[in-house]
Amino acid sequence: MNKIIYPPDFLWGAATAAYQIEGAWNEEGKGESIWDHFSHTPGKITNGDNGDVACDHYHRYPEDISLMRQIGLKAYRFSVSWPRILPAGSGIVNSAGLDFYDRLVDGLRAANIEPFITLHHWDYPKVLYERGGWINRDNLPYFADYAAILTKRLGDRIQHWTTFNEPGVIAIDGYISGEHAPGIKNDWKKAMQVTHNLMVAHGLAVQAIRACDPSLEVGIVLSQWGVDPASDEPADLAAAELSWNSRETAFLHPIFRGHYHPQMAEALGNNFPEVHSGDMALISQKLDFLGINSYSRSVIGAQGHISPIPGSEYTDMGWEVCAPAFRRLLNRLNHDYHLPPIYITENGSAFPDNLSPDGKIHDERRLDYLRQHFTQVRLAMQDGVDVRGYFVWSLMDNFEWGHGNTMRFGIIRTDFDTLKRTIKDSGEWYSRVIATNTVE
Ligand code: IFM
Image 1 (cartoon, helix red, strand yellow):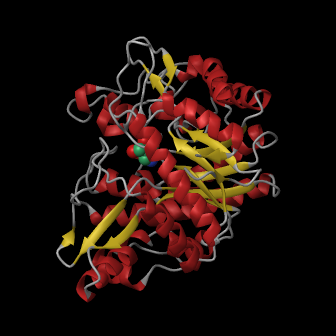
Image 2 (spheres, protein in one colour):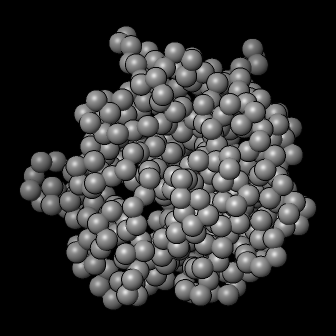
């Protein structure tokens, strides 16, 4: 097999999010988030699971840092629980919450692991939701205040700052499918206003971070799936293009071009959000990096979304495994937009894992998924896309939102009964990739 070599400074990492791993949902002054509330509502989460304990990372973070070190991670991407810092979303700061992230960051630095911070990965303060949430423009500056509090405390030790993780998921799964908190269904009007307001909040936070320290690097993490046409027939090509333009550009166009794609505006009709003067300039401020989360692709034809694709492999999430689509996606992004450097901020796969009699987890399919995707990203880099690093989703099996604990994405196994962690074969393989900077 060919050896694929990565640049010497390529940043190999792994990612997690606060609600998915921390637990300690009501400890040491933490306020309630909409995800605490949602997961405590009967019928919302598979098996009635919740993130009350999750991986108990809040208490076990030293062990988790040791495991990261054992794997040899160069970087770790995590998010902060906003209501752990500001229990009511604004106002009084919970110093115990800040202290936790302080210890985490110090631990990472001591282990020579570069911290990448995400300010918001969906666990929105419930108090703010009760005051109109992301729909209410008066709430948006609170996100900037929160950003400033964290920057002042951690900016001396963290260089890379991300405002939001996958804002599109907040809007679509929170307000259309209703599968995520706050669980509203089929409200396109609200979903699109949330989409726009999240970007305004992003712009305010970028300003707040830079006002604290202009030398910090600030970006956003977007979920982007490639879109492939079902065939080369003109009707399929046009349908795929329309799907890309009216959905996949929702954040890219405002942020990197300063306006919505005309086909998106047309498709939204009366659901197009209210845009205030000055919003687009705020949203399209220059960024230092772009985070891309990508797991799969959509195949679109004149008849709509085509699935399953005959002969394709699917993960437990029902997502097609199609690594070449990742290369095509990155090339398209690079072609269509003038982008800052890219980090792959999430990529990985959920497959069932079994603990073998030898005590190991031989997760060949996850390993193979990663090998294929690492390879395609390297090819995209050779095509000219400026990718600086790669964060595997996820460091460890964790609470997968509406699916509870049933989806295992980790390169470390979490036993949800005992909370024992075990590095899987994919984690050991990743360790060799990092040590040699080579994929074989
Ligand atoms: O677990 C999630 C993560 O929180 C956001 N991106 C996708 C992952 C897998 O579904």
